[in-house]
Length: 216
Image 1 (cartoon, rainbow, N blue to C red):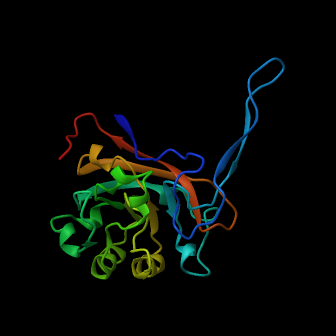
Image 2: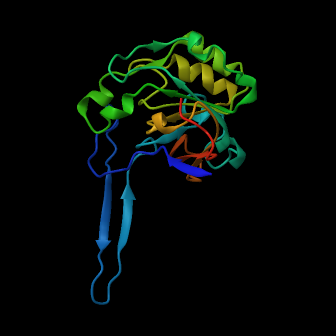
């Protein structure tokens, strides 16, 4: 098998969600030298970089990252090619035609938008789930849905979040490198930090792909 990293690197000062005023820094408290070792601390919000939203993000009373069972963060995945990276649009339910949603755990949408990561354009517009698509996914018994964009919804919306949260789905946002995955036949691993009562967490998203799988 081979491992494919689907995670953006967290860099101090990198662009964030426009309304997110959380500081973002990696503090170096000591460096290597005589009698010293490297020691660092982190300062950033729970939604920084490649991250998971738990249902708690938009639905009160739902479990946070410390309560969700660990098996909710691993499972069979499929990739839907849903964009050219240049023309953001609402993604409709027709994108899932021919996909047996009952046989998988995660649907990932490869829109090509990760090519704009680190630029001002990344957070200015992006492709997102239509209400009809969100309803289809929420009714399929999935563990979660992921995109290589900042959100399931457009900047000023939350309809897809509101549909997916009651279904107990996790949302994986700001994924990277989905173009390196085969359409199906891989296992997705997105383990969050076990943070008490939080609605989100950065993750190291990884796909486990058998060597014989081809990218299509």
